[in-house]
Image (cartoon, rainbow over all chains, first blue to last red; front, side):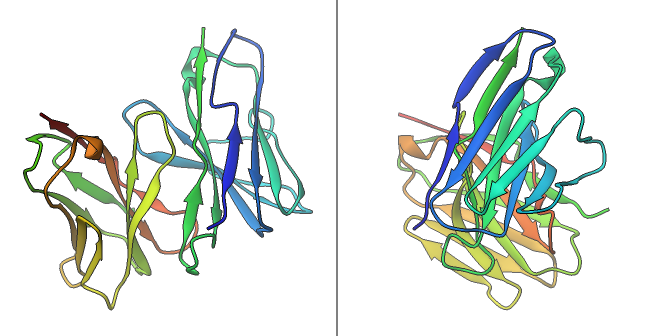
Length: 116
Length: 110
C-alpha cells in the first residue's frame, strides 16, 4: 500500500519561533488533512489542504497561526507559528484512499512538538 | 453534537488474556466505523473498517463488531501480546471531518 512520510518526527522549539512539518505521499491524492493531538486527547482536525486552492480551516484554527502549503498532489506542509507551550502536541497528516477502500484514511507517523 | 465515547479509558491485562474495548457513538448519518491502533508517539494505524451493513470484521487477533441499531461497536483482542500495548481509537465517518473517540489505553504486562 502507499506510504506517507512525515518529518520531522519530533522537535523541541523555543517560544516565539515556528516549526514547519512536511508530509510526502508516494501517490497523488486530492485532499490532505492536518490533525493535532494534544496530550491525552483525541485527534482534532486543523484543516483540509487541497492542491491549487487555499486550505479550509476548522473552527478555532486560523491561517496566520497554522499556514499550510499544498504545491502539488503528493506534498503538503503545515507551519505552526509563534510557538507557545500550549502548542506542544503531536501533529499528524492524513490522506484519504490509500488503503484500497474509498473509506480509507491513512496517517503519517506524526510529529511530536515540544515548546520550551 | 456528534460524539464518540470509548470505554474503558485505560485497561491493564496479562499477556495471553483476551479483552474487549467499547465504543458508543451518536454520529448520524453514519457511513462507516473504524478502529485504529496508535503506538505511543506514532500515527494511528487502521485495524478494521465496517460499514453500517456489516456487523463483524476480523483482522488477525482483532475482531470488531458493530450494532448500528444501538450505535455500539466493540473491539475484541484475543491472546494479547506485549506489542498490543497501545491506544485503540474508534473513529466514525459521516463525511469530513472524521469523529474520533479519545481512545482506550491498553497495557499488556508479562
